[in-house]
Structure formats: structure tokens, C-alpha cells
Length: 499
Image (spheres, helix red, strand yellow):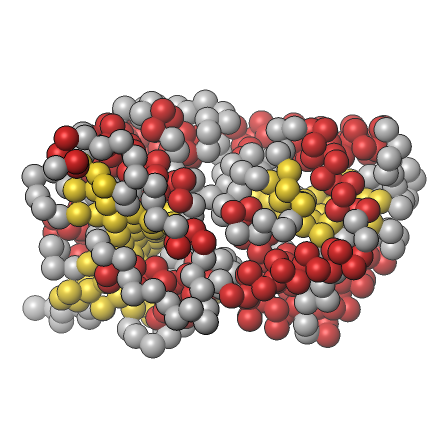
């Protein structure tokens, strides 16, 4: 008989593995750590204990054999080309994503997509059950794996299961549109603890369970039908690796690169920056509209003021994303054609991704950071910008519809749907005296430093270990975020809940 596979006390399940495959010129394959806050957070958690990560390796077809990388055991899950199309591009990103983001574009419903979603979630659950040790902690990530908690509980009732929602959870009026709403809620109720970015998201989930399943609810808890088991739902907002990113931003080569970027742009008086995944939720079109009007009204203009817009490629096989790219590139071309000057374009548009060092330099070069999503679970770019501004320079224009706004209230807030209001927020960010902007930046940095990604992970795991009870409060010397301090407001309950 083949030797038994090793098992682990902590298992992370996410759509993607924390590494990307890189093929060298000689055909050799190596794996490099993926960028992103989740990977950084899990590294801090797994540093002191053996852990496994279950996820897709990124290529369709057969999955690589399990392997170890960076002290983490990686267990790849295979996806066929049809499953990439139907489970990932289809159900996850053309059905769930629009519903969870206020139906900014219409959602598409296909039964074959749902079947693929079920099949892939079952495969993930089986992989988790295989690598989890007796009594292990299982932490499932995000909207692609909402059925996994209940499937894992069925296979391994001995383990403790958590799930974290990195995107918004929609109001029941939108969630109810999903033909498979009950199955998704029942899948999530397989967890012991459900974490969300905002209290509003946790409340939306509890309300959906009450209204669509008839479940008994009380404040932040849902009683699972047919059992006495309770599931707790609460907000624990994610963050960034403040210490690591600040150290990167302070490196002499990164600071020199920031100066080079400004020089290459003609040393404008005001450099504005947008950094987004190319997604219709990010408000890029609204941002460009506001900027174009400010240029047309001659309230700002090149070469004194310029905008750099980084748009990272995303989901380019989904029709809505292809259309968005076309619209944005046409808009940038029109703005530069009508309002730019020779040697001084109004918009510098970059449609590719950059390494962390380049992003840290861009953040330090930018006088005004434009973070204007129409809906966003958190938006870590806002926190990354604040972290990199160790010089207390810069100004953050931040949409009220991001999770980050609930923590970074001192930023220059805006409603991106209100173009005139967005223009005024941009002008305030430009014209506020430097001393006042330094005071604002100092407060923003204090918030992010006190609530970094390592603290997010430790607080989440403490909440999971204590669920359905609340964990022991942290010492008063380091207060918990307001999102977790305030419990869910009691809502209307059914007869069972009142009893």
C-alpha cells in the first residue's frame, strides 16, 4: 500500500494556490509566491505551525502533485478547461460577482454553470478532508467556495470550519435573485464562524438566513435547522502587512525610483494615481469622467497636473470585462486627444501589472491617490498607499462604498456616482494645506499600523476558536477595530428566535 499522506492542523482552502508557475527559457518550472494580502497573512499564521493550502494551480487539466514551498504544503486541485469556463469565469464571475456587487452589470444564470460550481466545490472539500488532521482548523476563503463548509462538515465532522468573505455580501433583495440561494446559504452554514469585511455584510447574511431559509436568528448568530448548532457571523476587516510594506517603501532604491517616476512625467505639480484591477466595480469610468470635466473646465490641466491610471488585466475572457477595457481605452484616447498637449498627455494609461517595488514607488510619487470603487469589500490599495507614505505626504480620495472607508474616515470621502461631488473631493485633496494633509495621513497610518494583516489573521482565528461565543476581548492597550467592537444590531426575529 502507498504511504499515507501527511495531515495538517491548519488547512487553508482558496480558489488559487499562493504561488504562480513560472516557466524558464530552458523549459524548467519553478513556483514563485503570489502577491497579495491573503498570502502575507497566511504566512504569518503558518510560520509557527505546519499548514496546508488547497487550491487551483492556475492551468487547466491535470494538477501537479502536492509539493512544499516556502514552508507550506501545497495541495493542487485540478480544473478542466470546461470547469474554468463554467465554475470560475461563469458562475463565480458572471453570476455571483455581479449579484454581490450591486448588479452594476446584469448577472447571468445558467444551470450548467451551477452544476460545475457544485462539482468543483465537492472536489475542494474532498481535498481538504484528505489533508486535515484530526480536529484541524479549516479556513475557507471567499465566494468561489461557498459550498465547501457544509461539504467538509459532512466528510469531517471533527474539524473546526471558518469562512471569510473578501467581497461584499449583498442585501437580501439582491441575493434572493439567485435561483440557488438556499443551497449557498446552507453551504455557508456548515461553518462555525463566518467573517465579513463590514458589519453591513454580516447583517445581510443573517437577514438572508432568516428571510430565505426561515432560520432562527439572534443578533450575530444563526441556528442551523434540525440541530442546536449555532453559526456566528461578524466583521473582521482584512488589512495589509504594514511593517513589511513600510520597510520596502523606505528602501533607498524604491525612494529613488519614486523620484525617477515624477521626473519621467515632467515633474508635475500634482501627480494623481489610480491603481485598480480592470473591473467594472472599481469606478474607473466615473473617475475619468470627473477628471475630464475638471480639465475641460480649466480648473486643472497638464503639464501642471497629470493622472497615471494603472489597470491590471482581469478576466479577459468574460464579455463584460472586454467591453469595459474597450470603453476605458476609448475614453483615455479622447481625453488625451482633446485635452492633452504635445509631451504632456493628460492621462498615462498602463494596462499591465507591476511588482511590489514599483507599486511602492508609484505610491510615494503620487500626490493624490484616487480610490473610487462603486462597491468593494475592502480595497487594500487604499491601505497600501497609506502604508507607503512614511513621509506623511499625499492625500487619499476614498469612495464611501469601500470597506476601507469604514476604517479610514479621515480620508477625502466621495460618492463616485456623484460626479460633481467627486470633482470637489479631488480639488479638496489637491488644495488642502500641506500641514492639514500631514495630520490626516498621520491618523490614517496609525489606523492601518494598529490593525495590520497579522492582527486580522490572529483575530479571525481567535473568533473561529471561540464560536459561537465571542472571543476574549483584546487588552485595552490595543483596542479592537470598531467593526468588531459593535455587535450586530438586533433585527426582527421569527417565533423560534424570540423563544
